[in-house]
Amino acid sequence: MLVHDGRRLGSGTPRHHEVVDFLYAEADVLDRRDHRSWLALLTDDIRYVVPVRVTTAHTLDDSALPDMAHFDEDGYSLRKRVERFETDHAWAEDPPSRTRRFVTNIRCWEGRTPDETHAESNLLLFRSRGDVQEHDLLSGRRTDTLRRTSDGLRLARREVLLDESVLRTQNLAIFL
Amino acid sequence: MLMDLGAVIEDVRRGMIPAVVYSDAEIFELEKRRVFGRTWVFLAHESEIPDPGDYVVRRLVDDSFIVSRDEHGQVRVLFNMCLHRGMQVCRAERGNASHFRCPYHAWTYKNSGELTGVPFHKDAYGGEAGLRRKGVSLLPASRVETYAGLIFASLDPDAPDLGEYLGGFRFYLDFYLGQSEVGAQLSGPQRFRVKANWKIGAENFAGDTYHTPHTHASVVDIDLFSAPKAKKRKEGALYFAGAGGGTTYKLPGTDFRGNLRSIGYPDEMIDRMEATWPEDRRAMVGTAGFMPSAATVLPNLSFVHNWPIVDADGLVVPFISVRQWQPVSATETEVLSWFAVDRLAPDWYKQASYKAYLMCFGSSGMFEQDDVENWTSITQMARGQMAERLNLHNRMGLTRDGTTVTESIDWPAPGRAYVGFGEHNQRALLDLWADLMDAGEMSRATTNGARAARHSTVE
Image (cartoon, rainbow over all chains, first blue to last red; front, side, top):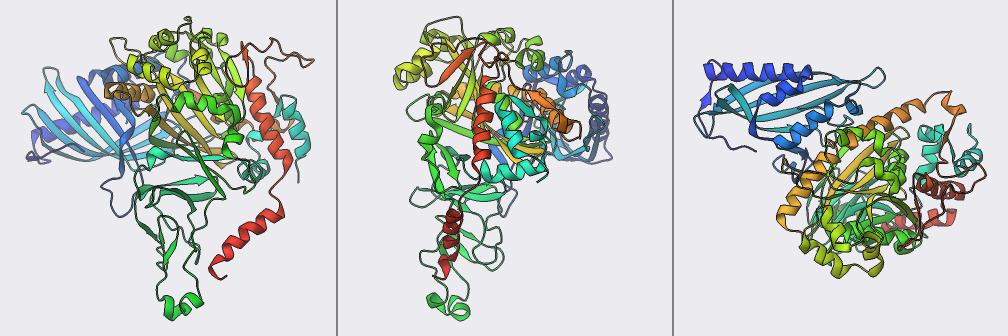
């Protein structure tokens, strides 16, 4: 869980609007499978984590495994994944999935440094493949750190806390 | 029965697989009892429940078990059904607990399974005279044994000992999980459902080197590996011993330390392997130069070992994954995928090896993604009437008169091995499956034995 004790940036503020615009544009890029443009939205020190959720007694506090994730990526591994999609042999996404990312409940706080914004949002991802299988839905909470650079806002850190302990989608050959 | 099981088994033994074995609900119902009801099935690794009270909940097909470490450190495998009215006692997936209390009427069990609490025991039952608590326990799995930290259960009281069941495959388990005198730790599992029959993944990991150059062409294209190249896959040996078999890569060197160093093992880990491993395992990866890759032990436990480049500077680091193909139905499987690493490995290595694992296998792994695409498609295609008329070809490495295309090689380790492409291991695995399907189910006497356990509260 990312620590955020910064001041809340209300939904009427310019910084909040800027984050909303960024997340909408990012979702569009991913839905179009324009992975090169998506990589350009990440900082060089990007950390991208999707923990494994588990069913635990009494509380949700310890419901993510501490030592295992679905994704635990840096710039190198994300670039490799994108390079793979660009080959002629990435069968998992050939033919490609049709996806739609719904990003809602966006809330923002000041980040740890003046150039960073902490943003939390809900993600619902619809994924349809081929003409035989049922569609898949993935639901989760994104916790993002967005950093202002000379090129505009960039994603520096993302954690996606999924709501399923057992994924009902056959692989994560998609970015969340 | 609509299907002629005898004919199916006969065809499987000829190396011609009726496509319906990957989709037929009747076959799956028989597999539940004849394969999963008779063999030793993996449930958890000891490192997942290191401390007293630790537990995980795992399934053996339809049966839920609490795998716990009791207050005395003993591993227990307890059927997760209350003795009273049958509610699932523990509904969390993992945790630490001294007791499990049924949510329905609050019958309470120690983490050893022993019944300790029955509300209003005296008023409702007249105390011990009406309902015995002492010596009464959640129903344990018929047999529980461990090997290399792997906790297995068998539902068959007459099953051979685990060591006898695994046979020569123990040698290879020790390669994956015995790289020092303390052995491996597991992280995970990632869990995901795929619409594929459970046998397809098991067969693939047992011996399918033939798919690597094509299915996994993309990871070659992006230079995720320095060496050996996928097209060299046919130079690896395919071994089968006891209850399982696997694949290897042929490394160019003949020096034990050199070969392990070439795939990214640091010297201190090699020192421990050298000190721990017997001569024949050192010979396999040393003088013979065969480095284990994927493997399967009957029925549904697989392993993989590979060594990608994990950063922009070209650092090569190996990883090991333990995985289970947990059947949900004839056409759906839950994959449970763990990362394994030697407990004494340096921290930097554990981190880098974990990264190597995530990049290659598991829910987001760049290998696994493409494998699953094939396996779901096979299962989908196997559903129809045309598939009932088709036997799939599983005879690679055999000529039509039944002789092998190449002789088995001189192999320094247990079992037999071939070099070159061939479905020797897939046939060997399915032959074991056929033997089980042919042998029928547990005897009535055994079933009566289980019934006695159910009666224990009133005896």
